[in-house]
Image (cartoon, rainbow, N blue to C red; front, side, top):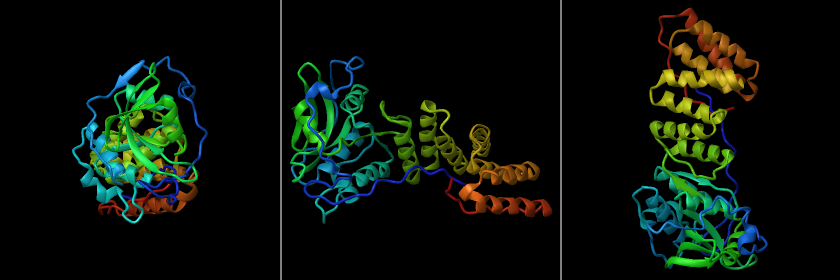
Amino acid sequence: MQLAYLLAAGWRKTVSSIACLLALFLLAGCASPGHQALSSVEDLPPRTELAETPFFSDDSHFCGPAALATVLTAAGFTTRPEALVGQVFLPGRQGSLQIEMLAGARRQGAIATVIPDALHALMREIAAGHPVVVLQNLGLSWAPSWHYAVAVGYDLQADTLLLRSGPLKRQALSLRTFMHTWDRSGRWAFVVSPPDQLPATATQAETVKALVAFERNASAVAAAQAYRTGLERWPHNPTLAMGLGNALYASGDKEGAQALFRQVVERHQLAAAYNNLARLLLESGNTNEARLLAQQGLAVAGPLRETLMETLKAIDDAAQTPKQSIPAAAEHRGQ
């Protein structure tokens, strides 16, 4: 069946750097002193430490695999740094790109979501029980030394952040020092989670990007679970609804898929939903409603006009030969 997909925004372009890893959009930020970097502490426990977070010591260039293995294991996935080296470490660059870190998590069956670039968000994730991979620049803006660590705790009274970092199982950094290193990396951080969970601070936009990317490596069942999780938080998001509908169709639940596509048609009048619903109705033999939906979709088709024209032709062909089986067309991604 020729299904249409809504696509999230593309990944940011990577640039080269040196040392432990490479970064995207290398930013030299101003240093932020401790609590001044916090927008509010009212909803934060004064002290939190995820003491049971695994620790994989590293004193080499493999800080990326070590940090990723730490958060994956904490989230319930079985892996070790050496199993991830081939997936996220670039020997020629002696480091790990951010995009490879996210992709490496997805290859293990996890959702990898970038969180807001704020200390408050970082602490909220820790308070919610989620260790956070953070990117630091331990050098200078003009002579960077890139490093991945895992934030596992904080103490507001002591003004410290706790990290699994390199060979240190419990590195206590002052918030001021941490913010110096995090600012210089663009304050990049992410959380991994199983398909039935999302980070506490994830934005709608980053969640959509994370789930669309997760679907590419996931089984239909896992993708459906992930999209359901997203829709529980943002029930009116059309991309998540389309993703769930496509995943349900791929897993054999055509009735569930039809209900999702019909919902998107009614709420958002998206061409992709008109196309997919028309295709499902065609498969069930309801050519009259399928034709009506395909025609309605053409009115808002945009770049999917050719796809909807093909769907309409398939409907007309089926109406002329109703007893002939309808072969499934190749899947299509579009908006």
